[in-house]
Length: 218
Image (cartoon, helix red, strand yellow):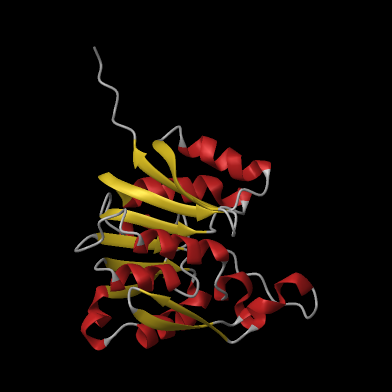
């Protein structure tokens, strides 16, 4: 969501993310995902949460075949690409500056017969949501998108708008600060939320959220 510019030596612990590409194998495909930390910052590197969400999708706990999925804050596109390889029709979204890199990664990593299974689209949370069908997606995906408290209201609004009544939201994140648990508390006011996977080595949680049924007046 946020595009944070690169500053030389500002984050030494993240030096491994400065590589121009990252390599993975998911869904029986070798994937090479381009990164561009210097130009786009956090939007253009593969974070652990994305990898763990891909691991969870590959486990087959969620039926992806033929499902309409949308990824928020897609960044490099790894999660959306893997979802498409596993059979979903995916819309990968991010803010406008990230779209060229995102599009290039989708084109480079999906075989010709699946190119039509993924489209790239601009989306800033809470803005222009009318361009996307209300409740139009069976699955809303997000990896490490819960980190800017100032965006929480808009993010929740976007999740509610996109997710179908019978669909689900899958969020992968590391619980770092009180703000992270605060967002989960906000979600629980609108969704049923449960933890469905935890990757101990990477310390990443995957949460599944479904819309609460409307209360019936007695």
